[in-house]
Length: 284
View: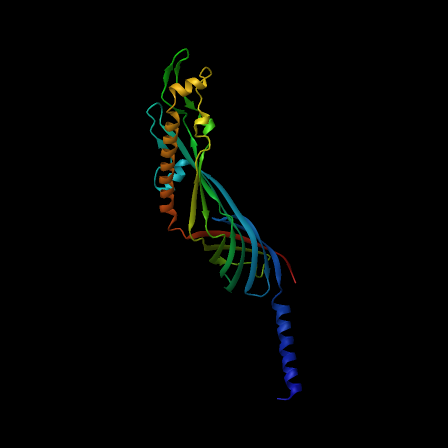
């Protein structure tokens, strides 16, 4: 084959390819709205070829969970209760705040008209916590103090503050794979719809707890007429009692952590069910 003939063949093939691209396909850019178990958000997309497209965007979700909802998830009572011989039991009602989402980039491949596969990476926005709010005042042993009368030391629940269990992923960058029914991005129309099922690999969780900052002897209310001399004489053991309560609360909070860990240890994959609606902004 001569050099001129080879150049002619290449020119013809290039012209044919250019013709097919200009007639059968135009690159697209647009927006894809999404709502999923990982959050609500949107993507910008670019479709450089007929079967491939790239999306980049964000999704986010925040929920408050009651004690009952947490208990149904964990399978154990998540409230913390400490027996108190001098008054009502010391009860912390545990609630949860669940935040999830991701800043993500994904590639989609559409081998068939109503089926696609996708894979990508996300920067996790997951950050959840369980918070224990004291429901009762902390009452200590009362004593009859001369010239004062009966004194019942108390730490008011408003002064105690919550215990907090932070639940975080160890991995901030999490891979994603999924399959979808419908169109990853608009194909021949300006609007597309899809139902996608996938999962993020999140790895292990880390649980860290913080004790109530106000559960200490400095917050004990002895009443208006009790002097420091009275405290030293009649309530010299009260610091020991406070430390015992703190130790008991810490022990029970660790039980809650163990219960949550037992549930989360098998959840290395975070399932995602997603509905998307794509809009073709322009083609070129």
